[in-house]
Amino acid sequence: MQWIGALLFIGTTTLAGFDISKRLNERPKHIRHMKNALQILEAEILYSQLPLPDAFATIAKQVPDPIGSFFKHVKDSLAYHNNNLSQVWNWYLEELMTSSAFDTNEAEILKQFGRTLGQHDFNQQQKHIHLTIKHLDRELDDARDNQYKYSKMAKSLGLLCGLFIVLLLI
Image 1 (tube, rainbow, N blue to C red):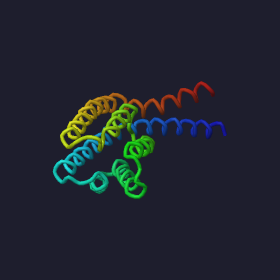
Image 2: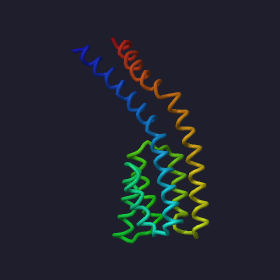
Image 3: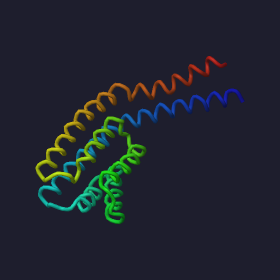
């Protein structure tokens, strides 16, 4: 019975390590998807001159989840409830934070962007989009560094911590 408990404990810590590694590996991908979404948004605003809900619908079709569903939810909320864009943006951004691998830095960058979205003319809005993309570039570099440094280590530490604790308790 003691060995079954030990194996379950080692399995749990190993799975925790793999989960941490998965989040480290997904963070750069999610940041790239958000950058892609912002570039699509820029094109839709400047060249197609679509209203924001229509631009969000276009983004939702072209960008994979969870970023695509974020823009779909924002679009739906604006279309059906006619709410304040900044409030809707922040509401669904909190949901995005739980379903994605974004860090608090990306959340703050996107919150700041949400405050400016739809508040300025085309040129100013383009500048805000470029600024947000620059900030996301910086976070992408940081995410890649963390992925390279810590992804394999998280997997190994999950297993090794489980083994160490089991050996201490036996």
